[in-house]
Image 1 (cartoon, rainbow, N blue to C red):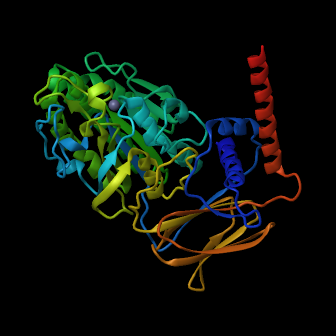
Image 2: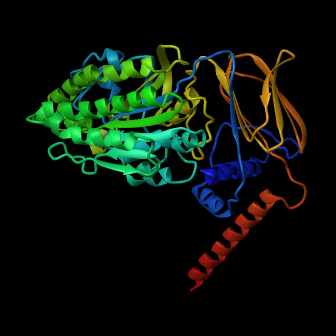
Image 3: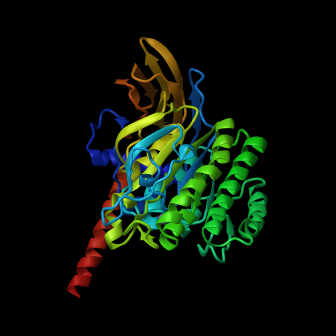
Length: 480
Ligand SMILES: [Zn+2]
């Protein structure tokens, strides 16, 4: 945990070198991030230990969520239940759709498309905020939203029927998952990397309850019950946290798998019926989240397409299926105490989900590979500061000091949107200030430029040496 935080700070230092910023002014506003995998890897080798602290200050009595559920429905295309869309088969004929009022709650984004409609890659995009992500990238330091939540004291838990590849499981403190993805002969495993008080026992109970859900059920009914077990187990975890550990923030990731399986193996009609059942079975989880001030993010990894109306088989990732809107369009609905309900137009991508989740949770978007942008859903803004120890930071508005603090990571949450602010920082490297309009969350960094051959230059020199040595080895190999 400490290492990843230090690595992040060093990445930022190098980021400034890359951006060719004004060396006299250490104030930076970060928006885009594009560090190469290899640099991140080398940095871990070069990482030094340091002690860091995080301070969070909430202003204006805003309500912030105590935790969050990221609910991913495998294979759920928004075309089949969003009121704005009509689903079409590949042959051009219209398909059945359903009303799903319980799945269109809160602040709902109409147009969200996935870069690659396949399960492993799409889950990687969701958690890294990078449109080109794959399962390997999920394992890199500071690549996922779980790395950010962990740094801020959240626990990461998951209940996943699909999308639970090895690097995804490693990101969780504890995960209950299905190793074989079979609905006929389901299996459930629990991987407890750093289990939180009582959660292993709770998950074990739910693992034992699974067979009873499926008892004497076959076909479409069995698929529906398979999903319901995942939803009910998620509700049980939310209840356990809210009732017994109300001050422990958490991120619970859920994947339910049987809508995807239903699309593949039962066909068009049952696929739509399974969405109706989800609408019914999902409501208790929504209710529990809203009653306990837990944020709820509802989305999918990809959609589903059918060749003709009433087709007995569907698909999304291969050939003719993968370019269909029905495979690419996914739902994204957010319920949170700091988000106003409404319908959002505009075009968004799956890579925008991770930064949006972080924004709603008032966490900085420090996703190292992300190319997504937070969708501005929050009804206030927050300022994140990353500073060398010893810096005193103050935030001013209209000549009045609003707030301030001194720590290596500061969060000032609950600032009114679209107001003018001035940030001031005083430390060993001097005094700095900058004026800005707060139209969305902002991230500032106050890091000293050390005179002479400092740590940053040492790292840069080390990287150059590594690259040179690697180059020489390659050249020798070519010559040989
Ligand atoms: Zn999938």
